Each structure stands twice: as structure tokens, then as C-alpha cells.
Image (cartoon, rainbow, N blue to C red; front, top):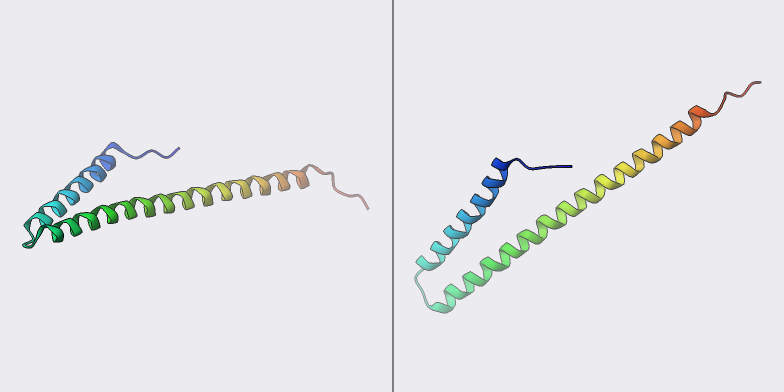
Length: 91
């Protein structure tokens, strides 16, 4: 089973929080009316949701491909064992 290191997990969480904080500061510093700020906030949340969805899609595809490859390897191994167990034909 795959396990991420604690350092990688810390980096991932920290970079997400820092990027979100920088985006929030950037949105609050933009001059303009409240509806402009609201538009950027909604866009930020939509982008975050899309990133999570895309990451999950890619992970699920990778996991499905790994499972498919393991099944194919097991079938191949079983086929090889079947042919290796049969005695040679005498002619």
C-alpha cells in the first residue's frame, strides 16, 4: 500500500493554505466594488473544487489502470503455469 511521507503531507497542506491565504489577500487588496471581490471569491472556490475533482479523476484512472495491469499479469502467470505443468508430447 502506498503511503506518503509526513514531510510530503506537511508540504502539501502548507502549500494549499499559503496559496489560499495569498489569494484571499490578493482579492482583498484589489481596488473596486464589493461585487468584483465577490466574483473573484466565487471564482477561487470554483477553481479549488475543479482542482480537487481533476486530481481525484486522475488518481482514480491511475488506480484503475494499476488494477487492470495486475489482473492481466495474474492471467498471464496462470496461463504460463498451465502450459508449464502439461507433460511434453511424445511423438
